[in-house]
Image 1 (cartoon, chains in turn green, blue):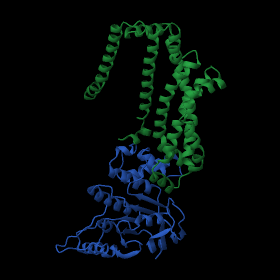
Image 2: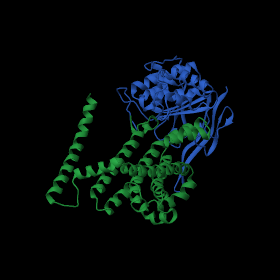
Image 3: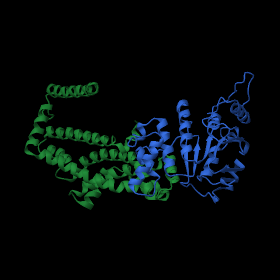
Length: 256
Length: 263
């Protein structure tokens, strides 16, 4: 009961703030008598309209599918690569400088090349998401391997275990919390990028929805609807990733 | 006398800015099979460096360490290190930790062996607990059990109990003695706690300041004090005073030790 009350105490201040912001927005639209900027009610109506005819779900589904594909590919590439870089100094010394140069280039800057190589199909946004998601995971994973406490590695060496066991029962579990951190950062960036990529590249997805709503008769209610939905989905993705940090195999790292 | 561990005239130095700083200088020591030797010495005298060389985690510059006649060239499961901060894997359960060093046998055999040792150190019922759910004393038991389960010939203990609170320290000492009565291991214990050494060891070796050599040896087992020893015993008290004086701590008029505790 106490726990529930605690939760309520935490939840009501942000809810109150959001209600105030929506009220302020409504009031501002009314007083300025703008004809272009929608009221919260109009945004809600617009959203319901799209939800009813199904296009809203198509857009959300398309964006999520692209993020999922690009992100999964990034994990599959980055985790083994990061582990390898972490364990073998020469590999790290060779690859790290290249990655450090590629990493600060915004994935948005790759859009022209993506269109050139992959056209305006589904592959381009996936490629851009892969690019944005792969580096944070590589960097975090390699960093995680480097910061494994020596006493654990020493203990494993002391017991004379095989390389396979060393890897599976010491290195990987020790690095898993760092991999998760990398994945959480990556997923956040990937979600940012998919919307930007869809604005230029594609004919579906939340990014496309924003551009399309503006082009097709200044439907700013739908622009804002898409923005709010993007924010909410981003929040949910982050909450989901944080949930993973509660798993028993990584909880040792995040305190008792 | 068959020596289990022979430390034969080893020396080691650290090189910094082209100059070599000798840490350990011509140190020799023989440890019998089943003997419990405590090594005490002033802080920074290279106790841990010495332990690393005996356990195979570091090589001496000169001389050699031989165990059962074979030269030590690296760490081996024949001698397990238990250190101050512990190395129980926090991502494995108690049982998984105990099974970690077992490289042979079926899963069932490993589990049975692990559970047997968990029970021996008083951790029955905690097999599925994660280390974060255990107290400092229980973690130490896990570490001891994990070492024992691989049936090592030697236990290397580097200030194993110094991170525990005083009461738990005393309790674990007794546990260790009880376990050693069940399974006789050769033990080398490094400690700065003279009472701990007197309570546990057959023989106490006092090291000198750097460059470290053996300054004096005390044969505790000679005093015919059976375990559990009473540290209030006059003979042990006298030996304690002598050891402390070897370490440079002299007695003041009231008979209390003037201690200069170093971190």
